[in-house]
Length: 242
Image (cartoon, rainbow, N blue to C red):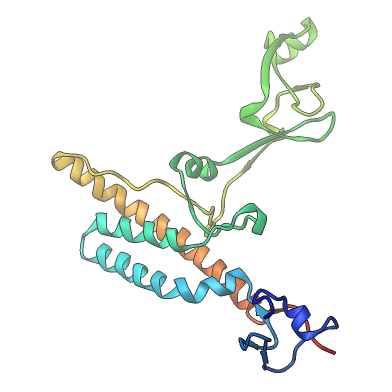
């Protein structure tokens, strides 16, 4: 009696080929091994989407209904469940994450205007908030011309050389609309009292519009990548008889 853990390579031979037909194989123990071909390994994005799509639709409808019916807490839960359904793969599988980060601090930081100042020595763009600024005394001739005793200077982060501060060197960049950050602020928390309730509802209205747009953006990316990879199935070689 042979070992039931006998490898397929020993059952079928040692020559490699890609199977093109389904082929039932009987081992020496009478066990039937049905080898379907081609053997396919679906991309993880493709495998997961059909499983989560129905649940995403369900929770999206729940969020929309809750918002329309004046049930903020239920809408918040629905959006949290939508985010939980989006996959996040470990580093060994590519590290791709479709989830929306929940961070009020990071969202507000991304929404701020970006102010940079150009170094005249190396042309590097420095974030204005992070450069060191200081005052130096000017010579008598410049003092007479400018009617100022000091001038403002700043130090480039890259080359560490001093530059005279001028608003002409400052560039202000603002984020256009629509723009999605893959980040949303934390949902508001209801406080006690009439004023607390009014503040909560106002904050919820603002939060809901941001959260739903960020979620829809990530779901759209997830579905687009699924559609692009839908036909890319990887054939696996197994050992078979020649």
